[in-house]
Length: 539
Image (cartoon, rainbow, N blue to C red; front, top):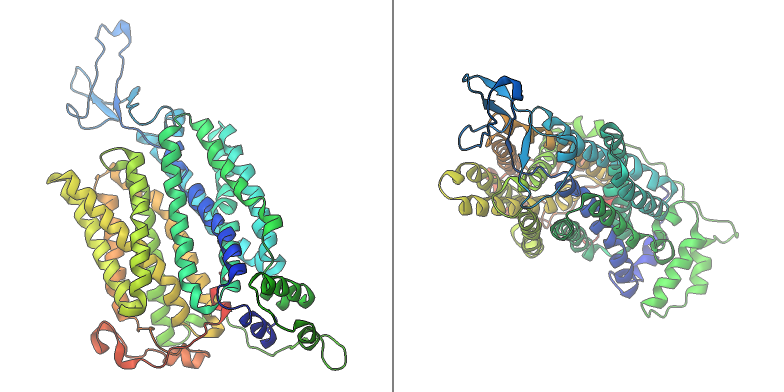
């Protein structure tokens, strides 16, 4: 994208976070709310209620009806007949305490067909992955606002439309497309619009608030699910939330930076003038408009630069960057793996599943507050590694503690979610600061790709409970622990000057690990860079 220093000069005049930026930011935040809500709709509309086997023997077999409960035969998918033979269950009785009919009971996605439920969740998550790759690129080409608005309309139609689908494979295909627009399109575009508009001192806080609002969307899923038991009506209500984004066509502005890069400087300048007026800035802009839009001959300034382009492969070509990249990719994968693993497993926790989902999302709020306050004091590496290690240990404990105390096990799971959510929030900033400017956007995109892949695999891992009820939690815990331990080998980035070139990136943080410079790595600190290049925030 074309780069001009003049756009930075103009944006600086707005201030980091004035009234205009605040209004636009609050509008962008709504996309995070709907993204979180759509992400977890299947947790209620396709919930798996508790069930027991209730086979009825044919009358001519002169056998009486029999009923097997988990207490008598600890398997709701197989029963013991009168001849002491294990046979497959043919009929089930579902616990209606918390759920009436769900997609699981509609299509009998239980026992040998449990893969159907996991495939539905995987389909949505792979749609999110596809959307983050495809729509992110389209937003660079056609504009952030354009993709935001198209995605808002699409998620509204798809969010309501899936309620009318009763054929499984059509539902799966539609869910994939639903994932593309439901939790990617508007969310990614809204995040980029915010980071391109606010000043560098507010970007970290705004980024964390996006994730906090995403968690609020998940809390909304549990609230509606608690009051609405009809899954048809429930899904329509979830879909109607996208109406919140439709007025954005008239309320939000295109990114001035994107417009400037596309050569549409007149439009960019008009938006900046509007923003300055809203922020009560009084500057003599008419003259400056001539200076920044036209050169002395009256022709438009183009500022073409011969800049070498880099690809994902360049992140693996040199030893230090390769080591850091592999470590960072594992961290993105593990953080997402643990985050969605706990979220999808909330229905397995004892107690009201709606309350569990609500609290599990709510526990992220104090985590984000803690991260915001501690990130610039304790450093990125220390927080990342310690929160992942503590979170993984808590998850591992939660797998075995039910044998001792169910309430302690649930508390351990909450601690795990608190820590992993906080680490997930930090990794965005950490990746931005770790990589040189010329590949920073590429590194964020690569990390995000691994996070989405982890989200896609998570529903499959939950099927391991068919072999052992503790297996999914243990798997999530071990991957999280491994990543937390290996992240101690990454360099600290707090109060350092961020690298600009590939050469600087290769030399950055060499020899700086928890074991060589201490967990806080303060011996290698340089003066903190005041401005973070904007391009690093685009995904």
